Length: 241
Image (cartoon, rainbow, N blue to C red; front, top):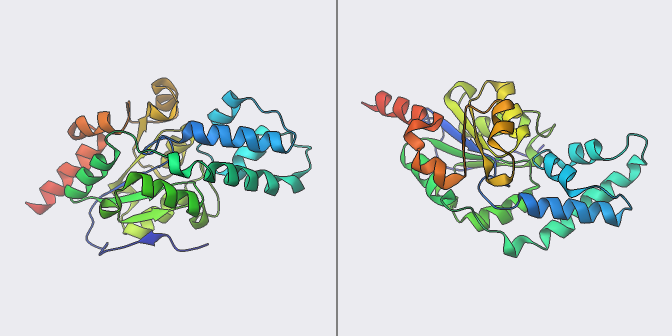
């Protein structure tokens, strides 16, 4: 396991906001869906896109295992993962951040909170997403699938992000678009904020454990003080006064 990327003094952060990336900050959930669909077709598996989209947000290994028959030739799984990686990489130049994503990270940073990306993406895909975000000045740490032994809904990636910014789970909030994000946060007792811009409904995210749900980064930013992030910002202000 590789150490998560981080920078800057982290010991003084009293709170942290962890962000999923695909479908949360970058409009790529359906790009991943299409890439998986094409990868499965290349390996003679006909998997409906709706079923694939439901699983986007899991680690690739879990997604493949969930969608394909248990009695398949598992020796071909690596080829499917490689095909998905190649197809998705072809879409890197077209990736776009959601409206308000960069401003949301900047506001959390300005409020004295550590900002960490906690993504199930491959390191290379995460780098492409960060390029689309253009918000590196506001990001203190970033973790990818390389930093976790188990992928979401296991909480390993969130643990790695918390370790990178040296903030305990009790002083953190997680923002994600998938049911699997909500479940990973719940495993650590971290309040989770859901966003519906990745394609999951508010009802699904709330049922999975979201403390609050917003349409996307801009909606969350405009309602930041009333959100669980606003609670962290209030604690930060109280501790500094």
